[in-house]
Amino acid sequence: MEYTRLGCTGLQVSRLCLGTMTFGREIDETESHNLLDHFVAAGGNFVDTADAYGAGRSEEIVGSWLQNKTRDDIVLATKVRFGAGLNRRGLGRKHILRSVDESLRRLGADYIDLYQVHMWDYGTPIEETLSTLDSLVASGKVRYLGISNVAGWQLQRTIDTCRAMGWERIVSLQPLYNLLDREAEWELVPVCHNEGVGVIPWSPLRGGWLTGKFRRGDRPAVGESRIGDTTSSDPAWTEAWSNYDNERTWAVIDALLLVAEKIDRTPAQVALNWLLGRPGVTAPILGVRSQTQLDDNLGAVGWELDESSRSRLDEASKRQAPYPYALLEDLRDV
Image (cartoon, rainbow, N blue to C red):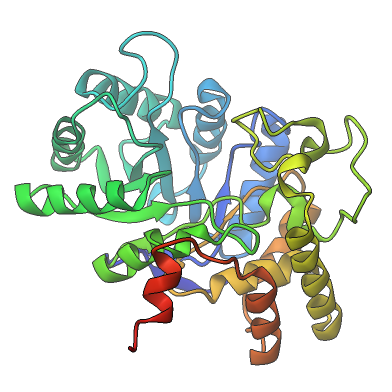
């Protein structure tokens, strides 16, 4: 396993992060514990969960596993934002303070290493959210703060507000980012680069699209894959077949398969290694359901793509940027 620091902090994390959204939903507690054990045995120390995963069940499973581990050896990340009921969702002070205590209880922990805003809250003043998060760091319940699922202006406003008010800064961003979804490079990644914020991509294999198991015109049967079961109208699962069954996707997959065969790696390993080599990326978040999948993903570290392979993937996955991004790039040296 390789390690790096999270953004501009002194916190050292493994280059791969184990996501736990499948825990308690697609795999049971025993198998979840086995995956955590296997990840740590391979050198991983970075685990990501959220209070919304399984309505807290994922945190409970991670917490039961933690009871037999040395807490300081694990970098534990969770999130806050979603919930059901008035004042039981969003980023208001009442909900955050209640949620952090409930997360700590489920995790059986005294502190959370990385506490992340799960998504922007349009109904709460950002100053209320950030002052509350600052107080959590001051209290010792939280060590570092992160953010996820925001637009570029929202990320920059968050960073600037923390700076102006002298509040604890945001050290990480968790965006959708992979070979098929590179829009984060238009604004989010540049902001992170300029501000020293670490990038922790979610869905680095886009729900299985980048594992090489799908082919043109061969939609998965019902019950065979979440990608085949969901539709583009389901906001929870945007990796639906209808959203990605297009020529660009298949061109990316063709290039991915060619590179994988050339260098004798699996498509998933190549896709993850490509992402690890992108500027500012700290640790892609792995979403696995079996030890076989985890072993395959762990093979993404310890080597680097050659320049010709990386260029092939860059070109195949490049998306025509809309205005003003294309203009700014084309005329940058004029």
